[in-house]
Each structure stands twice: as C-alpha cells, then as structure tokens.
Amino acid sequence: MIAPTLHAYLTISALLFALGFLGVLIRRNTLVVFMCLELMLVASTLALVAFSRFNGTMDGNVFVFFILTVAAAEVAVGLAIIVALFRQRRTIQVDELNSLKN
Amino acid sequence: MAQLLFNCFAAFTVVCAAGVVLNKNVVNAAMCLLLSLVGVAGLFVALNAYLLAFLLLLVYAGAVVALFLFIIMLLDTKGDQQPGLKHLSLVARILAFALVAGGFVSFFMRSQLPEPALATTPALGAELKLYAYQLFTTYLLPVQVLGFLLLIAMIGVIVLSKKFAATEDAK
Image 1: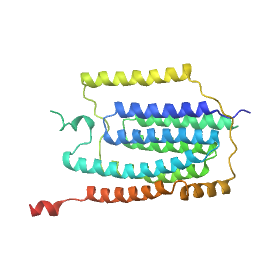
Image 2 (image 1 turned 90 degrees about the vertical axis):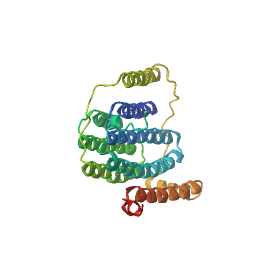
Image 3 (image 1 turned 180 degrees about the horizontal axis):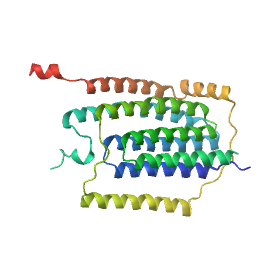
Image 4 (image 1 turned 90 degrees about the horizontal axis):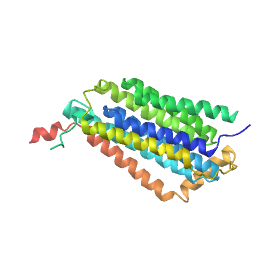
C-alpha cells in the first residue's frame, strides 16, 4: 500500500499545463484557446494543493480559493470580450483577427 | 487503493485534457474540459481537499463550462478551419513544442525534489473552521480586494455586452 508521491502530483500538473499551453499554441478558435487557458489555471491549482497537502499548511489551499475566484471573473470578462469581438468582426478565428497588423 | 485511484483519476484527467486540445468540434472540447475538471476534482479529494473539490465542481464545472456552452451556442461557431500554416507561425510552434518537450525531459532527468511524507490534515469540520479562520484573519485584505475585483468584473461585463445603439444614434 503506497500513497502517490508529491512527484506524481507535480508530474500530472506539469502534463496538464503543457497540454493547455500546446492548445493555446495550435488551436485557431478563440473559445478553445480560452478553454486551454482554464486548463493551465487548473493545473497550477493542482500543484498548489499538492504542495499544501505534503507540507501540512493551509496557505496553498486558501490561495486556490483566490485563484478560483479570479478565474471565474476572468472567464466572464473574456467571454464578454469574445462576444463583442464576434459582433464587430463576425469571426473568432485567431488568424482572421489581424487588424493590429501593419 | 490510494495509488490505484490516483492512477485512474490522473489518466482520466490527462486524456480528457488532450481531448480539449485535439477535438475539432468546440462543443466536444467543452465537454472534455468538463470531464477533465471532474478528474482534477477527484485528485483534490485524493489530496484531502474536499472543500476545494466541491468548489471546483461548483464553480468550474457548474458555472464556467455552462457559460462556455452558452457562448458556443450563441455564436454558432464552426470548429477550426485549417488554412495552410504561415511560415513564421509554424516555426514558432515547433520552437514552443521543443521548449515544452525540453522542459519535460529535464524535469524527469534531473528533478531533485525532496519527498516529504504526507502531513496530517485536520478532520473535515476542523478543516472548514481553519479555512474560515485564515480567510478572515491572515487573508482578510485579499478577500476584500477579490470582492472589489468581482464587482469590477461584473460592471465590466455589463458594459462590454451592452449594445451602444443609443450613443450611436446621438452622434
């Protein structure tokens, strides 16, 4: 009977973060890019909770509280921006949003 | 038993996260995100963070993914269209991929973390009390700031999603 180690949790967290990062890089749809950003945030919270559990402190867990709150606010504002963008340009593909170019 | 549960939830989480990245359909990607979050909540339970697991399901799976699905239906967007990759962005992607892979290799080759034993955690009721105590003493200022942040975000969203027909008429 062995319990999973801190290293295992950090590996999962790093994997999740890398997957989110790759998603941000390779996807063209702004909504999916945004979902991948959420994935990266959740990966960081997993690392925080794991550190907190193995060190016997509550601070990491309390910090995850704050991250959840900020993430909720961020999603609301981000989606509102995406909707406003869609109203203006009729597209949310990253490649076509290049009006700042040149 | 703990190891088995950890393996199941970890594999589930990572597979679903890969589903978010690889799925062409946006609705399927959102559903994969939901399942991935359920997996992370399971990992939180394995770490004895019951309250955080519950909050993650409530806030992320309940509110955030539902919001994503609403917006997907509202915008009626197609999945990724794949025109040919531009030269520069292709190079940038390969470079970033190499960077991530390099980070992983160095992580597995030479990470030297101390392996602390599992610390004891307080019982569930005492844990809740500890959360409340910390939030209202040590972290009182961040809690207040977060309250303002939520208020500002709410006002910002209302302003952003408002149609400014009235001001355009006035011009």
